[in-house]
Length: 245
Ligand code: BV8
Image 1 (cartoon, rainbow, N blue to C red):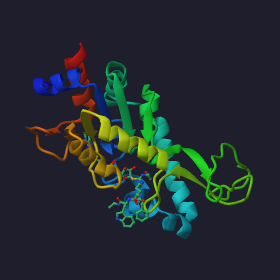
Image 2: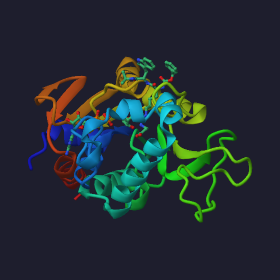
Image 3: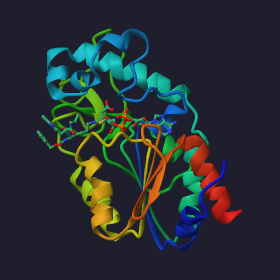
Image 4: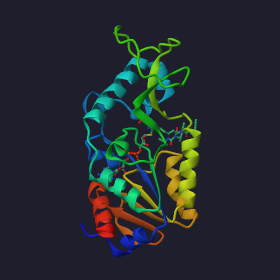
């Protein structure tokens, strides 16, 4: 895959690079994106309803099982070349920050060291009342969701639901990284969900060049916003290869 030399030069010269990833980066690991038709038994449910406090209040068992199904998908998935390319980029760029909207932990499994998880991580479980992480619970009953061993409230996935605030420190760190970078990459995100969707604009307003890599854009290389129609699992490795090999 040929990468435009202007983009390669921008990356080579960048002192500070910030990357925002969305479900499209994990799609090539076989994890359905949020807006693709959910496969299997979840095709009839609206993710934004299941991923919400009201959805959990209305049907805690269904929501717990939806996350258990997704957690299984994630555990069977492997990081793809797009994740691996971002690990090398982190090693090559002086100031590098990776912000992800994904909750699958694949960036960390690929080897990324510094990952800002804006929407939490499906691999962690918390108490729905105390908010603290819970690692073991009574599995002898078939009641779902399981209950917190400390207070008896339902357990829930450690993810940010629609209508919930993002972790303050993570959002602040992401905002700062968007303001301070000279190159911002937005990869595999539809840019629908706020406040993450505002990060590319924050970067542009702070003078950064912004590259958007997605399948729902046409390629248009007009500074300072460059849109590239490409698969992240192909384009990111080709960019890293062109810049440093
Ligand atoms: C908040 C964790 C303050 C859970 C997620 C009305 C009422 C209440 C709230 C709102 C409202 N209106 C707006 C809001 C704010 C709301 C929001 O933005 N809603 C949207 C739907 C309009 N945001 C919130 O609620 C946030 N909190 O604002 O708090 C507040 C509080 C109360 C009231 C108001 C405000 C919390 C948002 C976090 C939600 N949690 N995830 C879980 O995963 O179960 S978001 C979830 O959806 C994902 O984490 C992800 O972030 C998002 C999906 O977005 P993408 O990652 O972009 O995925 P998507 O499928 O959309 O796109 C994939 C893209 O990849 C596509 O463009 C596709 O073309 C591309 N692609 C596919 N394959 C590839 C590819 N690209 C490259 N290569 C490929 N191979």
